[in-house]
Length: 212
Image (cartoon, rainbow, N blue to C red; front, side):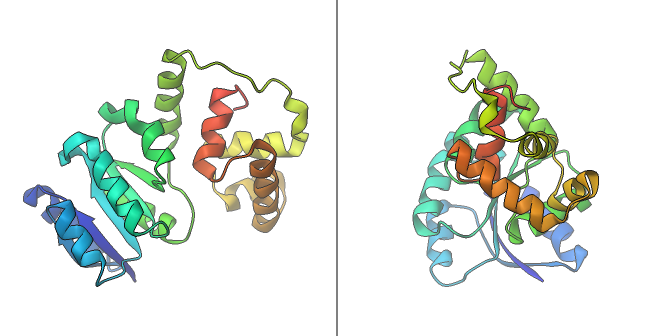
């Protein structure tokens, strides 16, 4: 059972999310709040497994709320409910330590799976996120300084490209005929070589530097 805390100031929207999660039999709502101050107060008392934030109905695209939550807890996974209209903020959300996105048009099962994924320590960023982020970064005309692909081995490049396509550890292992643990080991080496801290930053780096 995954304990979920929800920040959502639109009651009707929140009741829909609660219904989906509780009906799944895999999630329990430990608390919900309409304001960030109330949410932080409750967070001092209860420790959820996952924090779910509806960005669509937040002020300032949820930036200040995410910052306040991350000052209170840097470890609890944060999953955002958003739409493609927020693609200009994807980079900032990732830099603030958000662990995943779920689009508001996703199915019920996808929401539950996203929550389970971030609870288990993995990031959840659908392929559409990287497509939109790539478009945004290119529109900014990002200056690429990473030119020598030889810093990564061929196997590491293959694994990096599969992560960019949204494959999981297990799926990459099956595709390359190696164990998920070996995939994880390669991923750690990639992150060290590229000086990135998370899967999200690794994939963002790949798109910025045309390694995908």
